[in-house]
Length: 301
Image 1 (cartoon, one colour):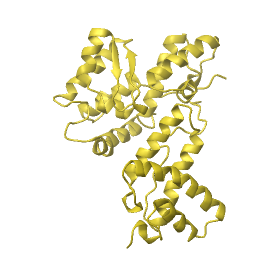
Image 2 (cartoon, one colour; image 1 turned 90 degrees about the vertical axis):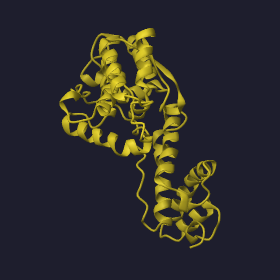
Image 3 (cartoon, one colour; image 1 turned 180 degrees about the horizontal axis):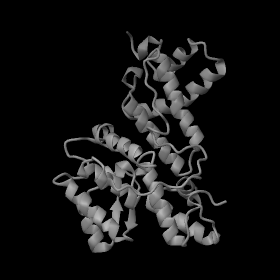
Image 4 (cartoon, one colour; image 1 turned 90 degrees about the horizontal axis):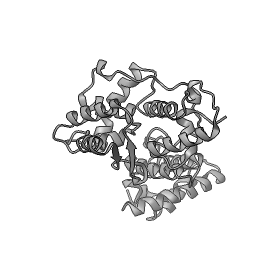
């Protein structure tokens, strides 16, 4: 088969357009999908991929994660970012004649839900010691619960260094696995956090991070991390580890403001204090926009 699955061009974008035109799709859908695909085409070229046969799910996930960062910075709407990833799926399904397995904009790329505001209570903290998980997996869960870390941030954290830093300076610097490469500091506010870091440092053993040294991020995400996500979903009201970021945010909100978060049936009585708390929590969670915090603790009413 010739280059780009034989769709008449050595240029990925043109080949994609040719493939779309061969389907029964309407002119408007061909135009909109190929126009959105052009942005992915440029991203792929920048990553050294110049033919459709070399496009894989990991490349699309990486593209989607970059879009998620732009959504967080307020540069793009969640709806548009999701549409950009969806168009890549449409094109790839077409050129592979249905063999392509779609990449989820939200689940795989972490693009925010469209206008999502949490209106249900955050899950209670999970006693991970009662579950059949490894020490490393337990460390990931506890870092999510007690520091609000993303799964990737917790996995790539050098817990030994973080523990030493917390004891010495009372803060922890989060720099590996962050969205957009934005480093942030989280101030230690409880003894539980110190205990979490100590346990994570012990679980880390001789590795450079909590994640096992004999695995890369992709293999860890698809194996050990996926396993603990499934266990958490089965053993608690949390849908996954991300829900524990919401628990952390709600706990911090109550500590800062003095009453429960809106999602936990709290009523905002001081809008200035509410805003200040959201600003603080946004920084601790690694978000560039304060309005994203509504998806963790509820809206401002």
